[in-house]
Image (cartoon, rainbow, N blue to C red; front, top):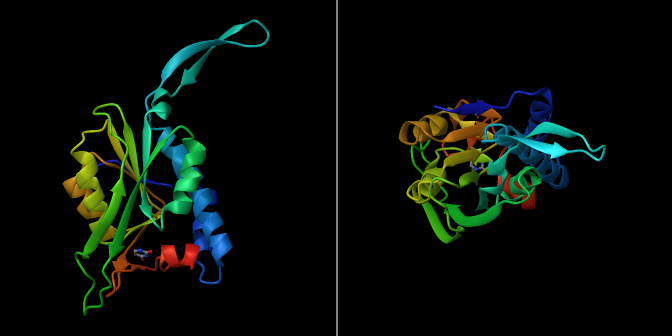
Length: 216
Ligand code: URA
């Protein structure tokens, strides 16, 4: 169960800023971009590499590292909330091909936190996933019930990529458990696992609605 919880003071500092209700739209978005970059670098550290030799301008050969999987990355942007996170991920994976999925959670208000949200996917465009070669990063800052993520995972997993990554900022305990039970092979990156969902399916303490806070 590869669950990666970023715990560097810098990632926690930025997370704390964007959790703060007084952080405005511009700084909220900037924070997500910065976190996308940090998560991207952590993801890159799990990718396959080889030892190569290069010649420096001094005419001397030296050994080094080439992460060849940097060339085999597809990033899927779950619109619209993931857009700033993807901007940051692209700093770590400039050669990535990109897909988009437009999903809408049907608004819900119950007595209890929902176990499942009704999700409508009304547009998707994902580049061809090469079986056993591509590393697919599915990006969504908030993984609550995981209903959206599971829909996207189903599409991606059946193409049998080399690895599937989730790049998120806050996930609920319930959402993480649900995903890793069904897809134990997924590399799940997040910065915080928050304990609860409220009766509308929002993560608590969370940071509110990531799409609204980024874009108004
Ligand atoms: N999506 C959000 O933007 N926030 C949540 O808390 C849950 C889902």
